[in-house]
Length: 217
Length: 81
Image: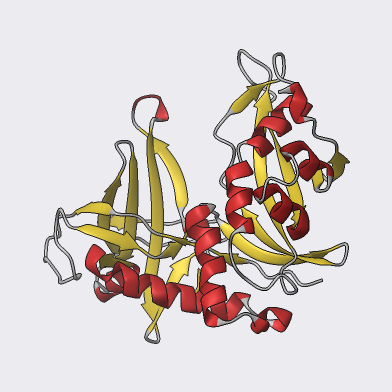
């Protein structure tokens, strides 16, 4: 096929491969028509999935586990990457030092719900958003890695909301939630409630700290 | 402050369908399940079809100096890391 791309002034020739994923989602991979080998670097048979993922994880490890994070063993690195990628379905991974604690930062896909401002308050909306992640938080507490290097988990997600019926004021609130590992371990061991976990954590919405009351849900 | 961002790998079992005029070898065939290894931030999302219900996630790639590069849809720059 031929197409002119943004930033280009001339028509280019491409091989297009359409990959069917779910009923209404297609991934289309474009490579120059004279470089079919480029496809082999991006798309591999399912039988090669393990080796492909190992190469990908090794590449991510080299970029991510730097500085103090080099203290993690190869197994620990793999556990953290698998947690962020597979368990959390994260779209980005990072680390951040916040209030003297190193957090593993995982960006989650945007909240699938678009909340109606007329029916759901911000406190309820964020409470439901965080409440949906409790299983993920327990899963992180069970990832056996050194806690002196990563002392908590930070989740970031966009919470979409607007006013029905046309949602012309649709807006995405950036939610940043910091969960210290001590509180996560106690919650996973049923020593504290989910409410107590949130009380010991820091929840920011558009940069402002808020209090989340799960009892209002 | 340590803040290292790295895009995660998107992988999925997919069914590939393709028809190429010259039928070059790409390592898989129509109907095969495959994995895609591209950071999801490099996917360009568009919607087609009735009511925009069909989602297209486009990835553009090339090889330069023997190294695979992927185009960033936000600024059209090529990335090889």
